[in-house]
Length: 112
Image: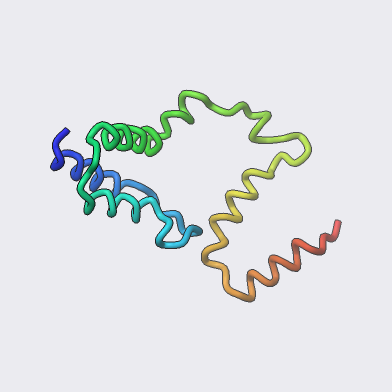
């Protein structure tokens, strides 16, 4: 694979990869992909494998090939655990300081 093709693949991955709002900016995959575009490669074989792996992850190939059973995603002890966790992760980046404090206190004290 030529260097131009590698750069095109990395650029395509860079535009399609979702942003992780909880991770610091210098830890995003986009940051790594930008570095890969700028740096001269040491081995074309490794780049091809990296690009292939990134496309497989982007297309959720392994999730489709090896789906998790419902019993694992909805444990009988707490069936809504993973949906609650996903909702919490979606809400966390936009929460204010006051909202974080209220959420923390709610986690410490539970009324049932």
